[in-house]
Image (tube, rainbow, N blue to C red):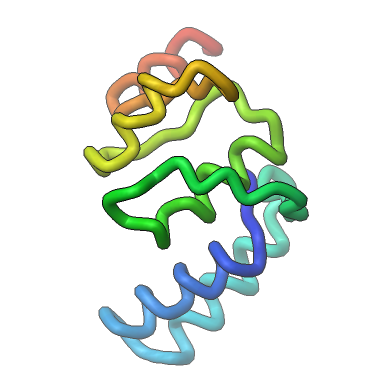
Length: 104
């Protein structure tokens, strides 16, 4: 899992909305300690998501981290399937689960 400051800030905000500030801070601290969570620096803002520009932070992170796929159920990301460059694989949660099953 790759994250940026901007992504962590959004996670913290959303968790705080549903639970509370302490729970949000605890989740973020835990994420930062996990060995499979990697901090990524953004150097390019691609601005490929037009319907919800705030989602571009996830696209930019995926691009910077050179991920195999971006996992989301958000339909706004479907536009990435039409972009010729850079090429993005957009997976549903089910596709991601199947890829994990293939690793076992």
